Image 1 (cartoon, rainbow, N blue to C red):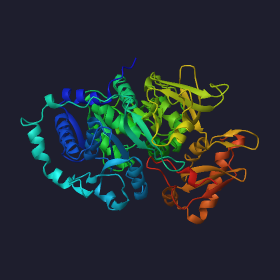
Image 2 (cartoon, rainbow, N blue to C red):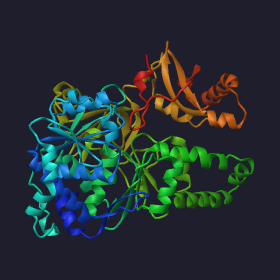
Image 3 (cartoon, rainbow, N blue to C red):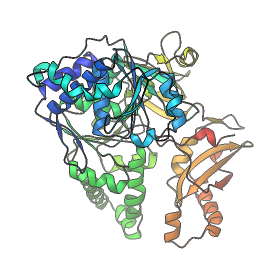
Image 4 (cartoon, rainbow, N blue to C red):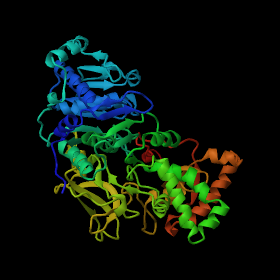
Length: 553
């Protein structure tokens, strides 16, 4: 059974016990901080908060790309007992301003490059604005005197800790786990985001599960390349490693396959947390061309030779991911079925989990050795799940969950909260799926995207898109209902087309061939009537999900 701990005290204990161990690095830079360095930096920030009159429970907004400074600002806020409001740096300036105001943040810590596009007069509640990179004052209310407090900060810190800051000085606030620790404004693919209130208990539930499952451990290595302002990366690339004495290396770059594979080889992490897109790109661009060649296809058809080939591919893939990881955990979106089947066939150590921001984020997970292919893992022991269906094992219904990780609600939005949390405490996820008696979940798609065919069949466009995206010359796609017929919106893979000399004028006939091939492998009621070419990539959320609502009408 998982024993919950006080969220803030987890880090008090970790920083004391791991004082001399490596804590935080930025990839490609010589700026490694020990846990002692990190705790000292947090203590300095606490003195600043005190000087500015920030109180436990006050909100502090944080907006910038992943960096050591971002991690320090986040952890300084939560260990002070204030409420962190992480804002994805990809949000536009108007949305950032709205979130800062809606959250009632008293302080905004922001990257200089983002601040350039924000109107200071539009900020209603903040006492002031600090630069994430330099801690310089970017904006302040007339009576706050932030600049003076910054100037006196070192003197006040030295007065408070005259013998220097040591592990004996690490003592954080006693704050109830039931209190809100974070308000996370979801990126959302269906319109404007809502502020998810996550308590210390919600965050502790995720972290303690990670500790109990030994996802990270003392002296382990972690490579963080998912956005830390998103619940998935935050919980398992930052909060859990910091709780265990792991050494986190922040990628601080866009994780293109080329950049990421180089970093994985250099860092050699003990666990890899990633989204499906990364594995799918590696499969489509590197593995699929190799196993589709004539001689290779023939070899794979010969018994005994196929296992030898698969073993070599598996080793090559494991080495590409650093060679020293226990497993790759895929989350954030469903993994393409073809990719998943292939990885299982070659015995690659991967597993697929399921979660959402409203659960901070984890709902289900199974270690790779017990993972059931096609599933999203087993419901956590600290969570319950059920399917709103007369036959939960065979007929998809909405997935409902409750338990330790379930959010308190949406900040200042009781109507939205009541719409998703019912009277018995069940959170209605909006995801459709089935469930086996042991709690293993199988996702089918979003309830809001489900299309009802003329014959009464439930069509999950994500399942068709997964097959379509594996077709030649398809970069990404959306399947929508147009006048009662299924239409696929496709952004072509122009790079692949150029390599084979396929011109723009030939693309319509090429896509008609793709449509014909696709319709051979989908159910009769899933056949695509038409493919419409898109001139540009689909607009996406910071989590890289397509903003589907922009393309359905």
